[in-house]
Length: 207
View 1 (spheres, rainbow, N blue to C red):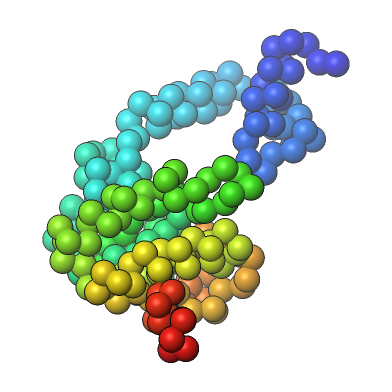
View 2 (tube, one colour):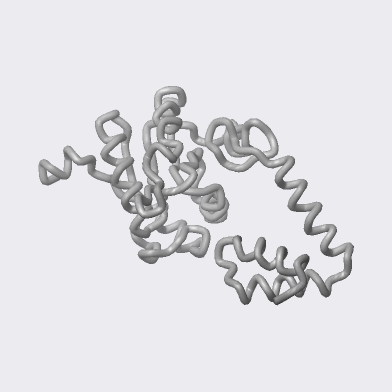
């Protein structure tokens, strides 16, 4: 329907999450009508991001250095580890100002329908950090949706027998919601009200 060059941009924009065909068309025509320097700035910014950004060697947060700013900060509490699905969740939690430990990014959540199992997540790396960093508490801050809850329960069963305290952020967050969209007050209260997560063994004993 459109000229090939325009259609290619629409197709590529349409591959982005949350961007439907109509939104892709609107964005493409906005870029087309914008000054050339605006489009150049956008493409340059994307290229620079791809060139400079990597994943932290310790926690898998995004970083411009081998170690991210949080992992490099000696003032953070090393014994408390907050497990999240994606790097953007760290930004949401940091906005609360209520957490002073460190993070671990799984890189997603368990979702069999999407072909994502435990082996596709950074779980082995999480286990490796427990002993190396003398972790005493793991806070499970996965999203309060089906995938996030399944991931939290899997991790609770895995971590429970290892002698580390496992807690889950409180249900002040709306079920089915994402951390990145939660306001600071709600997210802060969820952190403060985190609860102990029973391992499969505890659950079986009725505790």
